[in-house]
Image 1 (spheres, chains in turn yellow, cyan):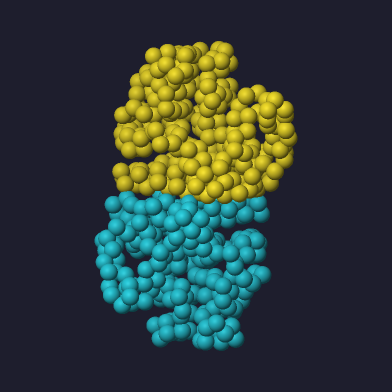
Image 2: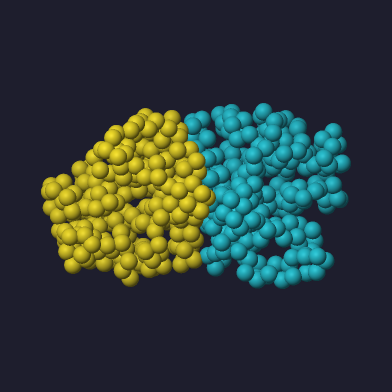
Length: 267
Length: 267
């Protein structure tokens, strides 16, 4: 079994991705797809006249400021447009995909942060009306049931809190926990670079291998959203996952290339 | 088993609806929910500066003009906001709902109309780039599997065409076919009137009973969107369904009231 995370952005070609996943399914491997939608959510927010805001935590991770209205936009972009257009693409290629958010069937259950800390002009501000959180449990039984019925699960944030509220969770980290929970043989994170770069944005500086016990040292090379991809990888490996690959989503056969040795392998 | 169709509009209280469905589930009945999203899709289109257009067919039925961009908005409103907020509400009340569109797992498979006819200023115009169609098959096996796992399916348009394209289908008619395919004991359509009114909008003119073989005669009393509700009822009854109720979604316990005799009963 593979768990593959794909961004929702414009730089990754859905058509090549879908064709590649189809060939992997035909070879008899089970696959679970997880996608993002950051680009679409940001664009929709801007078009609706309420531009997205991002928060930087004291430890340097960025996340979307998610008040109740932003959650509406988030659902529209992630669960509406990106999820359904991706599922439609799979259906058109003959793959019976089923698109679900982490809310549906409590696939991703987690906790909402009672408060988040935001660094603004050097000062830490506390925000309490934010719907952000962390996945803590994956409904493995439901995913296995869908796989057993020959369906391709296509999963998207948000997740559901223990109080039953939709929470914005990081897609890379949610995918990592899903891969670990399903005991996948590999967790592949597709991005718009060849993998982790020692000298971002120099593509020739690709780091091909990272021993899993040294992953923390490599956070120094991660820029922006790559930080969470490494964190997602680290969390999944700590839970017993054997292999994570951060690979180029722009290539013709992004998942097969990653399995064949492309990208940054962490094992 | 019950199939309940609820509008996506503002006049129907989701909280009362959710509480009522919960009590019915607790009494041991299986339920499938189908929802609309017309109000949200129209609002979103307007907010995004591309107001919705509606087409009237030569036979007098209205439907949304759905080009590719409108389908994006449609997915955002129906599958994003309305579906996920409804599922979230069920989760918060302790019901393990699972939100799916007709695309997902090919729940609603249908055909896209190669051309649609629009009456404009007395003349008929042919439109060929529209993504509108009709549900022809319901994936009963998948719905039964979800019900068997203790989940509450919450279904939404669009459907998927045999070529794998998302198509805008009428929610009332899709729900009717679903009720017939599942051999539900009742198909309940909630709306923002007490039922079918002989003298719309006089609420005291409620038609309480319609013999199922006389349903066509009653189309004369249907205004606007009520026409499709009657058509959905008619199609479901033709397929062997025993009972359709068109009932008031604004009441405190809309589904229980309908089962207890409220609204317009067609049987």
